[in-house]
Image (cartoon, rainbow, N blue to C red):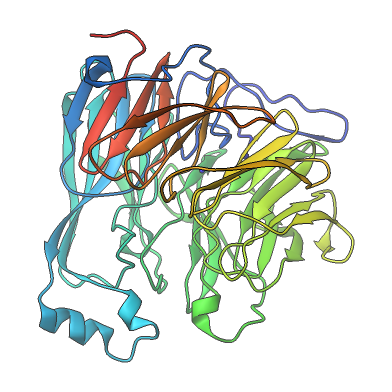
Length: 439
């Protein structure tokens, strides 16, 4: 994308708890609670073209995941004009790690709306054209952050290129918010919506902060700087994680991993609640998870580890509230937590099952391929999509038994989305709705 959200019903337990709600939408990255967990009991585990309820050609390119409001799917995308060798060389001048980055000649940012039932494109909205885009990692896109939907509004976030709030019926722009940092390799953090505020994370190589803007008019409600970085090099200060929303002792926390730190904030004021120095990790992309009263997150690049934090503290709780560390962790995809277990897959395809209480590895299994997309739990199966276009279906539980592998013709970097008993995948420039029943 886990992060248990607001929306329908919040059940507060005596100590640490998280909201629950009917899953009628998939309204943000990894679902309305950020859990990457579907309520469906009978998703398809194997399929071929006869199971395609529909396939839709999506204009442009983007690795943002699909979201839906029960009737329509929203995606961000970008039309990319190839840069000349001269343009690339000019942009790379004086840039650290320049050989790892590339650039487009120009970019048109888009918001695309697709009908859930038919697969027909309802809106294809050109938001803005950027004539001089910044450098980006070749594996990233100019439309990687996933949109968020709430109360008839869609927030489409493109990092420093801008954040648009659209009317979900008409596609008309309600407001635009502008913040700027140097992302170094392009934007990645997705927005979440909490109590009438869109939460935006900007962890660049030049500055790092979290901001909240009003869903009514896009005006800033608060802006909070990240903890002071211990590494002086800006390239080791960047991160791309999406906020996790949890309930702790009756109060809401925004938990946002960063380079070197993880911190929790009050969503009403932006005040920092607690922080933990997790080490030298940077480019932290996986979203944090929440299981058995623990915040569980990956430390990102350098040497990825999974760390569990007790979120009941205040201030710097590095010395007191770290409960365990597992010396393995994902660098790109988010984790899945369920029934006291933590599941994650490394970029190289090693799938782990870890005990959420102790951090001990229960089992591991090698899958073929490289993985950027986050896993989805639907029914009793975990769905893991590789960059090579394969979807591995694994039984949830200690055995990690692989029951099926399905193949698409194209790359998958976006995370899958459930709808009713079907699954929806973004593959290169296409969107597929997969049904268990053959068409």
